[in-house]
Length: 122
Image 1 (cartoon, one colour):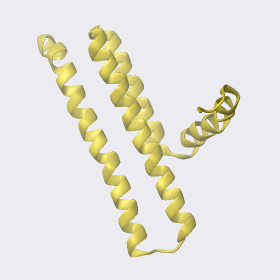
Image 2 (tube, rainbow, N blue to C red):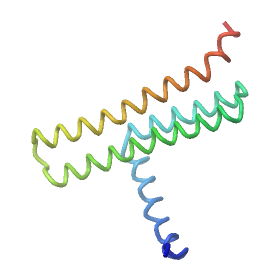
Image 3 (cartoon, rainbow, N blue to C red):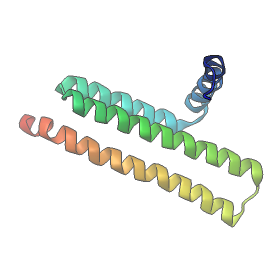
């Protein structure tokens, strides 16, 4: 059987706390969120299609989610081994690499969507 609605709703406050924590303590998350907001503004300005808008929302969400997971991974690594450790450093680098890959995919998606709207203005 699935989880009751009451149990599901009990998961909401910790999720909001996590988002507040990311916003207040993680500069990279704030920068990415602000970039996402700018992209949404540009999408509105250029009047992108509904499908393009949906793709942008999903990609922005994916970038923020990967950044949040990377932050969680770094927090766990720091808790397990606060001092420098080659394997922990490697794990952190891999998490950071995942964020970079998602950002590159987001940039490519943004270029594919926005270039046809920008070119006529040049």
